[in-house]
Image 1 (cartoon, rainbow, N blue to C red):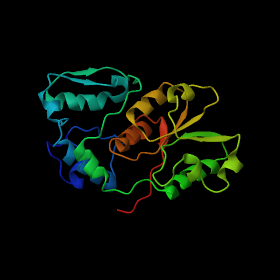
Image 2: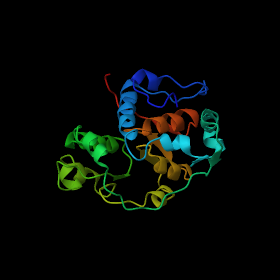
Image 3: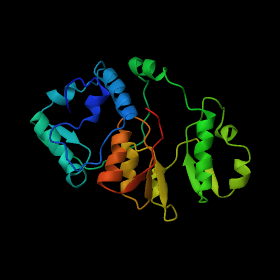
Image 4: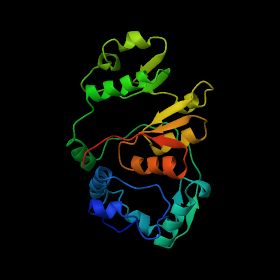
Amino acid sequence: MRGENPSSEAEIIEPPPGFPVDSSIKLHKHEARLIVALHSMWKNSSNSDSGFVSRGCHCIQTTREIEGPYCEIVKHKFKKPVVLAGPVLPEPIETSNIEENWLKWLKKFQGKTKDQFQELVLGLELTGYPFFAALKPLIEAETIEEALPKGFKERTQGKCIVHSGWAEQQLMLSYPSVGCFVTHCGGNSLSEAMINECQLILVPNFGDQFINSRFFGGDLKVGVEKGRILVC
């Protein structure tokens, strides 16, 4: 929103002209650094934001009640109508191969470790509440069960489930006994959460998840963010 090619953390952190002064969307340095890196790839891909400028109008998956002030910024910035389609819950789809430029960038970073995984499930255990955790398998372990902390399965048997496959998230969130949803703040997950009555714990990890978390936790006040503690 500040320019065609944002190239620095400072430029990303500084709100663009017309941005709501009472907005809770503010980025930390490490988050801005990641977004700059992502943008450097997007501008070289076929899905570049140049299409955002060339289209006759913008159709956004939201409502005026949820993101009205931000949609007005887009409208005035690009001098084009903004059509609000409302939250649309996606159907499960087959994922395609990752583009080569994305793959090269992703390979630069360390994969999820067993230590990180164990700290997450131990933290959930310490809450004392039953939980269902749908987590992706680790590279370091052949199965989710293999990566679990020692004694975890015995301590939580019958009370907690750690699952590595696909979960019927929308249906589970609507179940009467489900009271809290710990989410990575992906757009679709938040849309599904909004139509249910779960309390939201927001744990953003990547890209626009940081913005989503500040917006849902700060502006809408429908969740509580629990971010990572990083030294920058």
